[in-house]
Image (cartoon, rainbow, N blue to C red; front, side, top):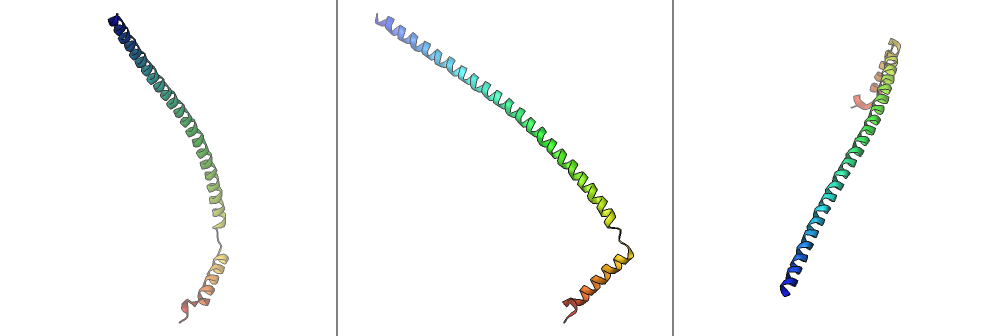
Amino acid sequence: MQSDIISEIIEVEDNATKVVEVARQKANHLIADAEGETNQKNKAALKERRLLNNKKIEAIVKNNKAEIKEYEESLKKNTQVDKTNIDKIAATLATKICNSSVFDK
């Protein structure tokens, strides 16, 4: 009778150990699946964000190119200085230099 009880206890313990091991394995699989799903979602979100940021960068670059072109056009117009303007600029510089304290001793 005692041996039957002992056998039954050992059997219950073995079954409990098996149940715990199966539960551990299921938990590990669930965790691995959750990690995989999370990684996929993160990759998808990052890809989407990267595409959005690239579109923003492209828009900024396009806008900057337009601004640069506009600036270059304005430089072409403004850099055509005639002789009268050059003479005025030279006279102004000469006057400022002569009136400065550079030549004072």
